[in-house]
Length: 367
Ligand SMILES: [Mn+2]
Image (cartoon, rainbow, N blue to C red; front, side, top):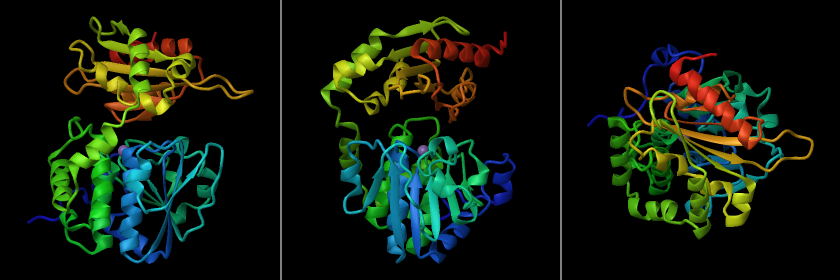
C-alpha cells in the first residue's frame, strides 16, 4: 500500500512555482522538529479550523515524539476551540499584544504572511533560522523562515502536515496516527474544504480523509461540534446581510454578489465577526453568481483610518474568477477560490473599490 499519499514532492518541483515554495522536504522538516527540545507553534491571527487543527495536530505529534510544544494564537478564537483543544494548552493573546516565542524552534502553520502575523511578528523578525513554516497558500513572505514546507496543491495545511506528523509519531501512514493527532488534522481538512466539497479536494485529500477516519476520527461528532453550534444572532445577522444584497453585472447579468454589514448590524443582532463565516459561500448557490463577497465594517481605532473586512469566494469552472488576484488589488490575498482583504476604507468606499477591482480582474479593464 502506498504511504507517500500526500505531498512529499521533490523540492525542485515545488520551487519552480516561484519564491513562495518549499525549501526543505517534509521529512527534513520533521527531523528539524525532532532535533529541537522546546517548540513554539503558532498560526495566523483569528485562527480558523485549519489554523487550530494544524497547531494542535503538530503540537500533539511533537508531544508523542517526547518534545515540549507550546501553542500560541492571537484571538479572537472560535467558540468550539476549547472542545477541540481538550487538555492541550493553547495560549491565546489579544490583538496588539506581542508574546515571546523563545523555543528552540518556532513552527508557523497555515500562513507565511506578515500581514497575518502581526502579534507574533516581533518574536519572528530576525529569527528566520529558527522558524519553520508549513503552509498551503499561494503567497507568503519568504524572509520569515529559512525552512519552509509549502504546497498549494494541498486543500489544507493539515494535509501538508500529515506526513510530518506521521514521521514524528513513527508511523508509516496517517491511518496509524494516534487519534488525538488525527482528529485536529481532519478538522483542518474538513473545514478548509467545506466538509470535502470545494474544488480544492483532490484524490490525495480524500485518501487522507479516509486514512484519518481509519485512525478513529468521528466525523459526525466533529461536524456537530463545528457546524451545528450557531447562536440565533447569526441568523438575524444573515437576515440583515441578505437585506443588503446587491447583484452586479460584471461580465454577465448578476454574476457578482455583494453583501455589506455595518457595526449597527452586529450590535443589533448581538452577533460577532466570527458569525459571518459561510455567508459568502451561500450566495454561490445562485446560478448566475460567479463571485460572492461579504464586506464588514470594523471598529475604528482612535487616530486610525476606517477599515473594512472583505471575504470573497468564487465558483470553479471555465469562468472562474481569481479572488486571490481581486483581493491583491486591495492589498489582501488568499486562495484562487477563497480570499480576503482589509482595505483602510469606510464600508461604502470599500464596496466601490471592490467593484472596481472585480471589473479590472474579470474584464481586464484598467480604465
Ligand atoms: Mn488553511
